[in-house]
Length: 144
Length: 316
Image 1 (cartoon, rainbow over the protein chains, first blue to last red):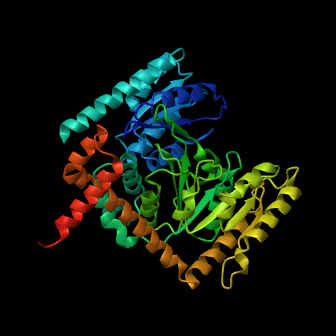
Image 2 (cartoon, each protein chain N blue to C red):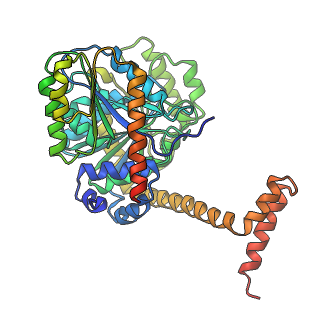
Image 3 (tube, rainbow over the protein chains, first blue to last red):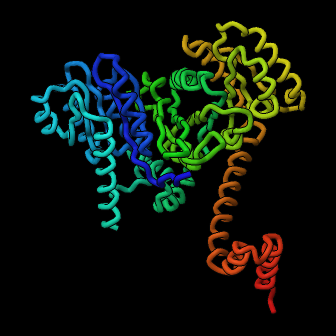
């Protein structure tokens, strides 16, 4: 049996907005678990306030938002702002779902490190997060 | 670098959350942190909620949170879900059922993976409960993973343990007799609107009767209560029974004794680990290499080690 990493990446996966399409987020959650990450679910129809609060209570490293309904140009920046205001600017923000390519610059401006638009492969998401986590752990080790 | 201990003692959620992360990750800063918060612990009522998978534990916890909040108490929740033994990953989804409390500042919900432990809890669960205790949460609810017969570590951790059952378990109830159902101060038969309720209820009643703990003078007689967690029915009576049990523990002196026993367990576990580490760097190292090569049997090796230590202690 492979050894379990002492310090797994913790990621909060949440859905903002009123849609109830959970297939995408569920597939991603399982892929991340297979990659050895701790995935925390908050449920459907979440507000930016509720997601920010959960991210802090769970002390996650990454917040991943699935957005499949319009409104992401308002709710996603709002979540990023709330996290900054509550002293949680160190968390990596990523998003995915039905997000038109022309909205990507606005979301990156708001603090999202990466937007996975329609058609992004699950393996791409896993690889991105693994690379980010390795770099973060290496940077921390170098500081000590 | 924020002073995590001072901030969590002041009730800051971000600091408490970081402290639990250190405990979970076995970060070296966790030891010093626990030393600093220890004096502020020993106040919270730690409540365990356990039972088989799918019994409705999370939904019941959601109702208990609401009732405790109505009574003006601040509530911490530790929700444990299984970690995959193969990948180390986990999907922690218990807070989905508690999302109505997401914006309540009097509620702190934390999800934890079991991370290789097999008793229904994680190694850091008890220390995480101490963190919430030190933060000033009057009630700390620990929801275990769905358990079978023998994963009853929660009983040693919590002051009061709720066992959640569902109708129609029939033979499974028989099987649980020897483990889960021997423990627990409050039994809840959830999904009481389901077929088979009456039969399972009678079964559990009989079981409690056979347990006979109510017949001991001054003892606690376990309660059996119905609930329909999805309709928010039953939580009021459960919290009333929890309050009664807490009073019973305090009046009998058992509350303080339990806290003492848990400190004792922690001390023994830590001392064991520290002594073992010392021995393996010192006198046990050579013996261990002989045992590993099967040149020496483990029984003789252990005796020789013990004899060496005794001789070292004796003044010459």
